[in-house]
Image (cartoon, rainbow, N blue to C red; front, side, top):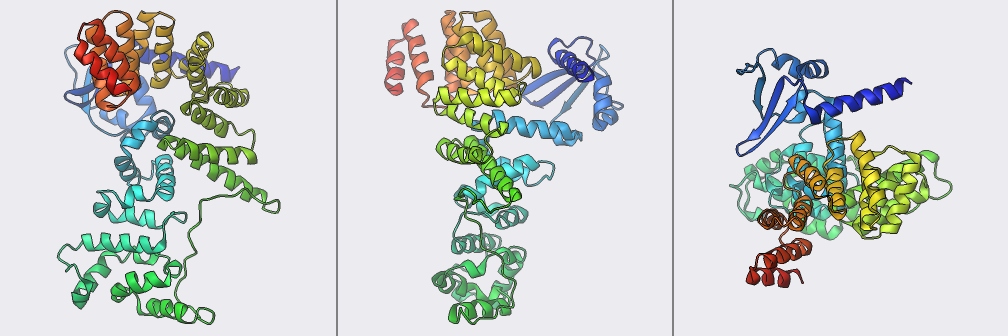
Length: 472
């Protein structure tokens, strides 16, 4: 009984976000022209957050005795651990394309704040599997030392150790731009400057995993920045590998992420760890848009633990992205048998039903998801399009407008609203949405076709033809 009571109470409180009845606080966030306003209730803010409890004492009133608060504080500044965790999961589950486009900012921000463990873990998987995304980026040489250290500590970094040495040296040189380009011309002071810049990074290199050729060509020119004992051990290892007695600290080789399924004699704990690694890896690949790799890892994960609801719903979402709708539906059905009220599974099954033209079932799932999470941009987006497909244009616009308030630059939602406006004969508004969508995704064939057809209805035939040609 108590669980049902609290579920209903939570639903009633969620409704306050929609109806805004009796609000006495307006929170205004962002910077002009991108400003968003939220209506809230001081009693709830006071009880849930020490930050608001402190700030509400000092905020001024306007003429209607409603607080006005302008701020650009990040969510973790509020001291709400549940909110921080929720936002991270929301980003990972609902904003894959945004995370891919903004990965450089995401990993740098997440690694600066220990409260962002979920995002840190997500970034670590991506960096480990695709290290070139960092090492070959324009930002690499300007990374802060703590971020480089975080990367070098990854035991599963999928890069040859000789290359890791190269990149680390290049980063160190970039911190000392006055160094001559040829190390053969360096003085002892030059080597000391580089050693000082890399003092916390050098111990993290797996020197004994570097090939003999790379030791000679890449490491030897900079041997003066290494401890003398370490350099002697490196030389000894390659000169008499079977007799060398190494006194330096030897870090283990980095793990190869080409994971094979466990043998029967591996412990249950090891199997659980492998399943977890595969599942997290598969989800990271999905967010990156690498669906084949995601499918491989999630399938391996499910071979170990067939009824893992997380792996099932992530693989279902991956199948949906690959247009394999029946397989998506099978996984999401099984996931929902295990966790019937999981919002992620409900909204992705709703999206899958939409692609299968099973609109009533899609609507039922999306309604249930929104009953649990009323301001979920993904669920609102797809329910809005379902309403369009059912010729319920007023309801469609209401949902799509609300979805765009949550995610203003979502190209898919802009496409859906653009085609809804088109069906309503509101061609100028349709063109406006499709133009904005195509600025975000310039080669989106769907948006180009809809805009082309809209131009045709407006008798703008040259522009229509150009869009149709580009969409081919």
